[in-house]
Picture (cartoon, rainbow, N blue to C red):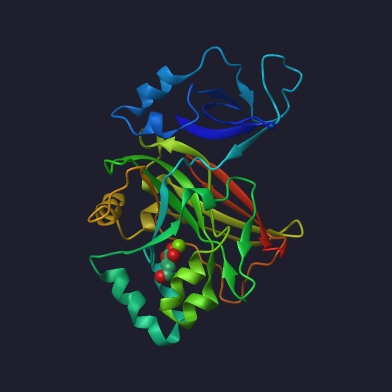
Length: 295
Ligand code: DO4
Ligand code: MG
């Protein structure tokens, strides 16, 4: 089962269950009311508002009077803090060692240490949803998207489901000095999440879960790479245990689990690029890349 948040034309945000190309609306717009309970599946089934018309996701059913159309998916986030793990795949460790000559050994140390790298990525209000732009920093010359499987975690630290995260990163800033990591990783529109949440029971096994990153420029593919979640060095439970060791999450948390795909060192994102992240069992998160426009 998959749940999502949507906005119908100019109406208020709503939560819903994905049913093929349609969304069946839930009574409350707050996903946490269905996810942060002992049995999310049951709560969602009981929460469907049978008095509301389903909503079409493909726009092609506009002629069907039983379907509402003209909808857009929103980030499937209520008030969760978004956190991220780093250097959980060999590919990330190797790329980081090359970019940060002076501090290379720290990446090897963190890849093998019991304690993972964990960092705060974004408050919920700052997250970009499906189709919304992500930014590259104007003071950076080397920017990449990081396609990551994201864990949806309840206040009781239970793994409820999965979504897709983009941990936008400025490689030259983090490479210059690891103490600059928050600036390389945390700025306006540096994090995208979506398009929906797949409940944990419905997710394929890590061996069958492919993550694919495709970057388009001017309609052409300029980067395409894939990995499997099973290439991750850490388990989901290990990351959740470390995250919750001394920190509580009254509103739940979303934890991006690190990237296993890094474009070659001569690649940087440009304004106008389009980033697609596909993860088996969840779907596709697409975001156009822009720079901040001075207002
Ligand atoms: O230490 C730098 C960040 C690592 C990261 O974000 C990743 O591996 O995904
Ligand atoms: Mg990352």
